[in-house]
Image (tube, rainbow, N blue to C red):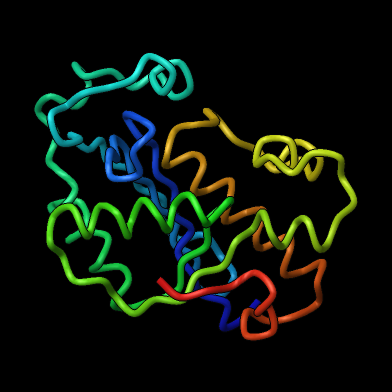
Length: 182
C-alpha cells in the first residue's frame, strides 16, 4: 500500500459533552504500515466525569487530575498532522466533533484536514449485522488489547481501515463515500 498515509484517531470523553476529552489516541500509518501508536490522558475542563462514561472506559478523575488539558495534547497531535493531514476514525462523527468542540472551547483555530470514517466504509463494504469496532476486529481477526482506550482503539481503527482499503481495491482518494473535512 505504497502512498497510503493517514493517522487513525480516537477520543474518550469524561461526560456526554464532546469537548470533555479525557484521553486521546493516534496510530500513524505510512505507506500502509503502522509506524507509531500513542495515547495521552487529558484533563477535561473541571476534571468532572459522568458515571456512565467511567463505566465505558474506566478512566477516573484521579487518573487525569495532573494531566495536561486539550490544547497541550492538540499541539502534539498537530505536529503529526503537519506531515499527514488525513485522519481516520471509527464513527468519525463522534471523534471529529470532539475535535471541533474542543477547539472551539479553547479558542484554537480549526485545521484544514480530510477525514475518513471506517464505520461508514464498513457499512458499505460488508454485510454484518453489527459494525462496532470490536465486532469488526473480531470478524477480521485484528488483534487488540483494551477496547475503549484511545490508543488501542486508534490502532484497531487503523488496522480495520487498512483492511477496508484492501477489500475495496482502491486508494484513499476513491473513498469519498466515507470522507469529509474537519
